Image (cartoon, rainbow, N blue to C red; front, side, top):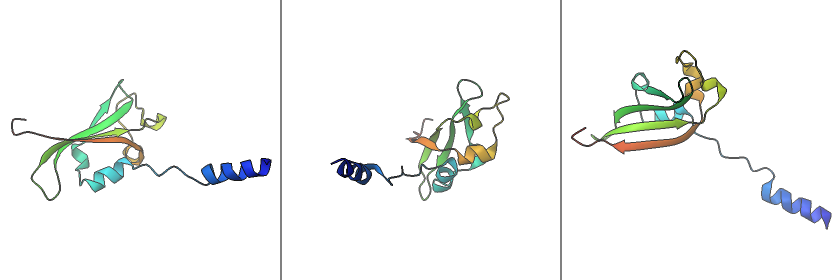
Length: 105
């Protein structure tokens, strides 16, 4: 009986890795964003929370605001508010929010 429980537990949970999270670099490349236009959002100051920019979606004329929310790690803290570009590009993405911009914005 005990062996069956172990085998059932392994069938249900062993070897299942969580899917890889997208990185900031993946999103920037996938949406063809200009990295020089990314604004770093930190709250509290120094703790990088997100990156934002306005862009035109590829193959369209639709202007959007893109917000890339990151999974915080200590590598994303900077008391001088100057983040290591390599660490930011490698940061896991928690959420991407794309908001269309109206003609009045």
